[in-house]
Image (cartoon, rainbow, N blue to C red; front, side, top):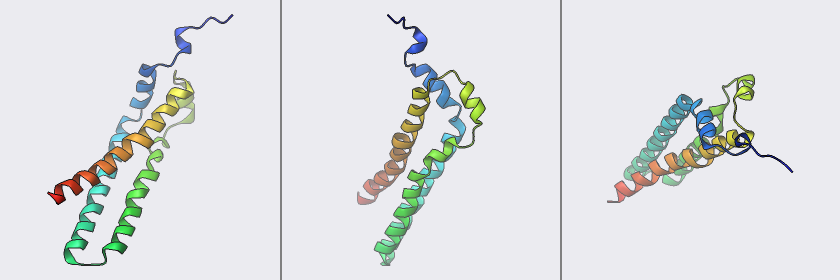
Length: 123
């Protein structure tokens, strides 16, 4: 028979505390990715307005916006591995911070800026 303790359970508090270590780098990356999405969308709209090759420009700029999505895990690359190993958080709590940020937060910001501008321009 096993005796489970509170430390054996998943803790949102520990996960949040771990994520707060990366607060500044997350904010900077989200701001940069939002600005990248904004500039790319405005360049596409400018190209459409001027009557240029919108397919080529859209392809190039969507590649740049895609890079902001794919490179989002680099936010976590500037920490000391020894420090991360000493943090009292379980590996699942650490990985959940990485996954929620990379697969939910960054795409919501990037696509949110793009689609909200699309909505504004269509009105």
